[in-house]
Length: 258
Image (tube, rainbow, N blue to C red; front, side, top):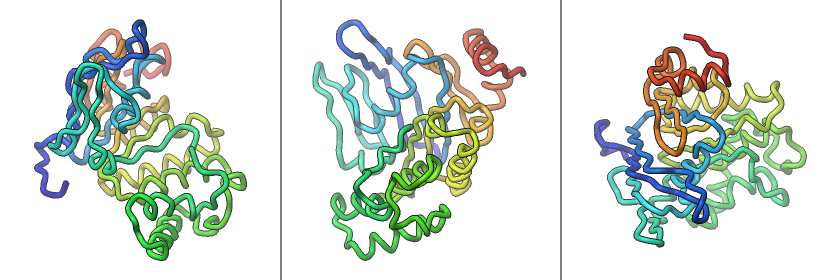
């Protein structure tokens, strides 16, 4: 990725179609282009395809049409009923989910080192050294030998982010990572993500937290009906949206006025 020009798309999503069965169409020809270093926040009504979009970009869902390239390389495409995914490209992307998805029978450090050791073949000692360093960055060094059941929700989510970073992703996806947390725990997770943003990590996020969107996003995309309705800087989309559908959504759900 270092060789990429900032004018080259990191992610290019073209005419993306995704449905569940014959009658449920979630993405209907969606187009997004994301440049290196961008932090894209996707907002929109429930059922508008936001989380599905992230799962597709992560290679977790089949598609019915369209294509995705990553750093100029073909990544995901659909040919009739078959979806083709380049699994080597997928290794360059990390994702953190709403509900942590930590392995309950493994310690925090074991959760972090499992993928580097099993997927990449990294020596365990080196993986543990890196894992402890990341935990220290996140203020979790004392929890290395704890199990997920012994952690707060905020700690679990920070461990989930640390685990995703162990594979040195070139893009991070965050799907509603604070929505399952008690309000007092949200700030500690948001701070970790803000720190990653300050270090230049490209990211695509789905969130309902508009304060967070304003503070972390370089772009906000409003999706509804499976397509992009509005796309622009956060101060414009959240503060002075051009599209009536965006305005109605923000006024109704978030009560944010220009």
